Image (tube, rainbow, N blue to C red; front, top):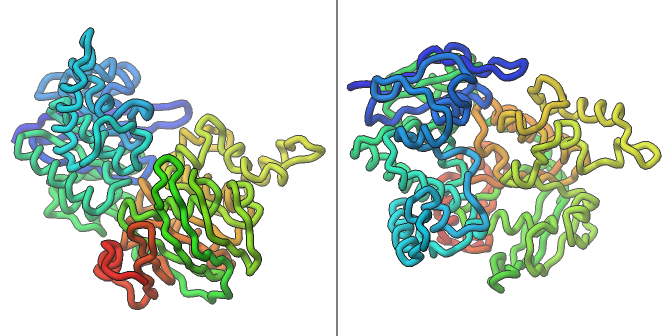
Length: 505
């Protein structure tokens, strides 16, 4: 089988950092080729070179497409050559409709007079391809992160590319949506389309890939056919050492109830629809409470409304340490001792244009102020101490958080909230888009906080994560809690039964 893509001796440097060092990456025509590595290994940088984000002349090395050398100077040149990429950071225009986003680069959108009936009909065809049953006139900002991801995939499919690069395509997808995507990739393979699949979910890599290339510290470690690999061997190649226990659960003493939520209901402002239907639950001191459920179950809506963030009409009561709290906004939540780490760290957890120090202290400025002014010496010391605790990896604390890997960005978000000394820490998809090594470190942070008596609420779409880290599990469906499981009785099958509305608690 001939190589459709050959990248030889690729070296890319940023100020003070060599991101790629003599990387070689060969991809066969019509295969699904997985590219694995920890955050910061160089995967995204390599793909940005391939797709013209980093133009020819900003890197060393050679790229051959169908045996001919190419020197892309722009994204458009790469697209015109038949390469499409679905970035980990979604590239959608939120104020535009689904149809407009899908066909943004299409000639149908560039005519003097746009035939909207034709636009909507064409977009419906592509939505059907990705199994998405929505009105194409819906604005993208009204969609969940998972549905936005599927719109991004539909958009890429319209380009009829020879090579499609998928950078963490399933990070925000439900199990059913992942299965739809896998079916799409298999169909593309049958049609001779080549896919480069970047993912930290190694079970998916083993299911879908033909070949796996591993990068570590900006260098090519290996390229192997999938038959020669296991999850353990890929992890060892990625991190350079064996990780014997991916979910380092630590048994600990669990104290009295720290958080009580009673008869909690939320009505969406825009539609008047009840999205959380009279939910009640409790959390104990030092407990890790897992929250499972399919997309649309209401997990994020429930917990973002508890901290005063979700725009809806709310009824019900919250008690912290037995005292009722009125939480109207995130500031009230912070003062009540509740911290919330959003599922979308770049959008709601960080200010990407600020440095690590500023992001870390943003929600606790009083701790670093003297005489009503920020004392930069105290601020630096405070940020350094808390980020040392979470083992942040960064050249220095003055670089912008946008320059950090996903795992280290998440550590900064966690550091920010730890500075508030929370009694309750809500983690919404805390390891989404993070490599296995960084996940392991975040799990250790979660264990340590629970050992110190912090009540942890862990919301995750990854069932092995929920099963591996939780003391107790609540399952949601249709805005209600449909099941409760203790650690020793929980299984994926039981969770899925409750998640599909099988039993109400």
